[in-house]
Length: 152
Image 1 (tube, rainbow, N blue to C red):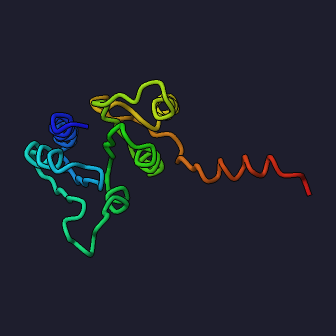
Image 2 (image 1 turned 90 degrees about the horizontal axis):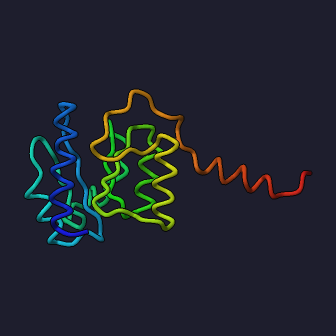
Image 3 (image 1 turned 135 degrees about the horizontal axis):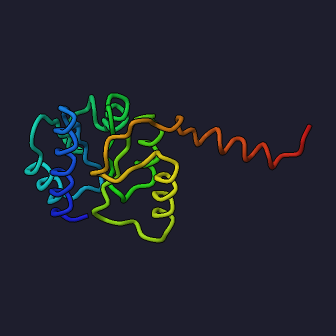
């Protein structure tokens, strides 16, 4: 993920927010380089709030869950399976920024499957008219484990 990718993501997410008369809540992570943070900050337009990871705000060091809980939609980068899965579990539209295509590996397989099931759409796709049922991976895992256990 390069500074150019970060700037392009900011512009694409900004267009989505503008199309819905919305604003952006943006958070960087511990893996975000300073150069990418700067490119992101310089490219955000319109109403937005940028939280830089590690900026010293003891009350809100990691606002990601708060952002997920308050967002009308979520834009995620393609480099994190957990970020993508957590966003898809919100029941809100999730848009995937494909600046860095995940490819044929596990992450690419995850993205393709979530897209097939309607939980994920490419950034730039139309706003969904309907959403799939809530994604509940814990229930799916629990059911699979129960299926492996002997019947009492």
